Image 1 (cartoon, rainbow over the protein chains, first blue to last red):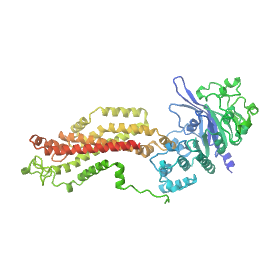
Image 2 (cartoon, rainbow over the protein chains, first blue to last red; image 1 turned 90 degrees about the vertical axis):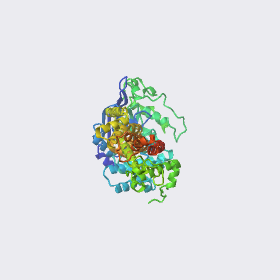
Image 3 (cartoon, chains in turn brown, red; image 1 turned 120 degrees about the horizontal axis):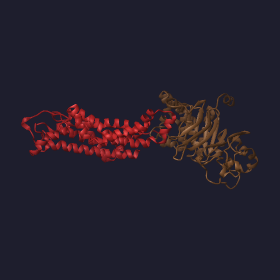
Length: 336
Length: 284
């Protein structure tokens, strides 16, 4: 049924060739170099990449939140509406109803002087829900994110809750506005490893049950693969590969994705962790060629001359000149 | 509702221990002074304006605890009645400057750009004019009495309140939870009134308490110059000027009593202000 529903609705999020650059004395400096990404209604997509690759910038652009003085081109559509054209009251309503954002550090994102109940009900109260109803809904939302003793938590202050509990409160507050799309910007990075799993499961379940789309940003490829339908890999302000999460290990075609998988410890095999040689380059340093060319073991002359575009190959989309041959070049056995 | 347990409000003694006994004593004494001002007719032994030609400039006695002034009025009663105008004036000055200062600084932090530059320049302009001078100028326009000086001092104190609030508001505005509020779709007014201002409130309170002492002194000075509260009403500043002649004749009570009262109240309020300030810096 969910599949049928999905097919009927337009893409929940559609980003086309999004470019953001900042003015510098030596000319504009790109931070996003043409991101293309779409999420179907009810779909969960993981956005993975090293630090500075533009993951958060992309998520913030969906909220129409840009760095000061940035120049922006391309399109960002949420549920068929152009986000970049919004302003004033329409923008506030869009942020309040259409999208919800979950952050890395919930503690800094919640007013420390207000109670948990105030935090969750504030959005509803703002929309005219009576105090009693809002509290009732808040309690049931807190219970739905597996927070025990929800009624008591309502009267506690953020300082009295642990990071994991607070992140659940954050999730509940986002669910309260029933957005079609949730942007989760490294929601578990500040959490204890043991609570990470719970929070991710709660977030994934909440989205699935309500048919909400999810953009899940993380450094952790395996974590992303576990709760999302598709994975998008970013580097230097570009999406290099998009593929179904279930086929991550068997169907990946971009050497960068392979290198990312090799550079993390494996649970199944004892092997050396292979660091990617060189340092990650920023979008403005990438020149005209492929952003991974200087560090890619399979690079050929054309790689540093022209930039490959994202094209469809089998089940995935890959931005690599040698994508077709990669199936034979990558050692899939070592990726497990 | 819950089984975990409930929080009991701390007892008076628990609070006193937390604030420190010195601060508690300050609050209690100042509170008593305020109560005496409110219930002056019940507390004062005599009328503040009843003269007695036969008993002028008398020293302290059982019937007049602090003696009488040059018109035979009971000094203690005049002090108690005088506290009403002497305390009410600075309260209004502080309220006025805090409200205007907070509004100006928070709006300039929120809106930014040319608006914030404009507000900054206006505050600089206000800073450059001595507060007492503005108060005296106001008398020239409005006429003698407290109204003119109180409004004028309220404006003159605004830049001080605004600068202090602005410095903490800038920091608060850049905190992540404020941005989250914007991303939940709240308007600037909601965020400022519900989150930003409540969270910088300790600083506003501290600044207000500290300004109170200066405002009391400035208003007393205006009354001393004969431009503020008009006789036969009682106010501390006015009483000092009325007692001046007696002071030169070797009867210091009429001038010294209000001087010491002003001194004690201002010092106590400033000490309390320091405490409030310390607590606010811990809170922020």
